Image 1 (tube, protein in one colour):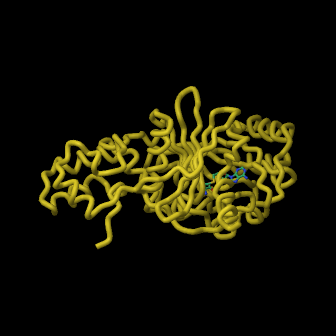
Image 2 (cartoon, rainbow, N blue to C red):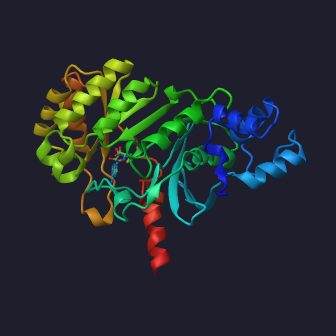
Image 3 (cartoon, helix red, strand yellow):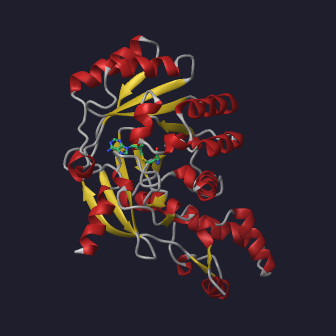
Length: 347
Ligand code: SAH
């Protein structure tokens, strides 16, 4: 029989599995807490569980843990980038950022990505597979362990498209926020999507308190379809309609990501188009000078352009901020480290 991934199981599932094995019902909660609060990576460490049960558990279940393949610390701002080796030899990345108010971790949801955004390093090496709930979760737990401190914010903005791995991501969110587990309020979680419209509707029905981030990056279909193939499937009107639905269902403000690329989407005309599209919605725009990735040939907009773009939006009633760049010296943009690893394996 194939072993079961115990860290991906919810507490009710664990209770059921334990009941069917004839264990006392409180054992399930104890094991769940070892996995999600005390973050152990072996059954042996569960000191209040009998050797007999631990032995049985080892036969039927396995505990996912990630090996740190590389750990890069920025000299500029204490940002730490991790390259993790998964049990099957694949790699994913996370970034931990330290702020005055705590640690924030940016995690991956897939090995590679299918979405093909032309400015993004994650997509270049192609898609391999979805991450399991426990592999997503373990990036948060491993960052806590490494920092010796609890992580207070989680952003799903690493490698992969979270809404293309919907079921596993949703299970991850439930496990992360479980009051018997890590118990992180979803108010401290952001999920970023390039615009998988049907799953924005599905997520709206869950009425979660998380922040939905939309990678918009263009004010019209002509530019967006050129830079983001997903737009050929669901265009900006369809995407923004889904966002309005999400906003109505959850009452949550949506955050729009807009990477400014020199000569592509950074003109005042683009700012004007963007402002008119977002007018009247509950939104916030995050402007990011695009991170250069060698293969893309894109360059970041100048400081003056970024400032002018921001000013136009703010002057026209659209709250916009410019995202601070962290970890600039360690290639903290998602996907870059995994690609280096793949290149190294090839040579
Ligand atoms: N697939 C999801 C989440 C992963 S990417 C999404 O598309 O939202 C996380 C964010 O980084 C997205 O907003 C993405 O568009 C942005 N991004 C990707 N490459 C970038 C680059 N070179 N410079 C700036 N932002 C980039």
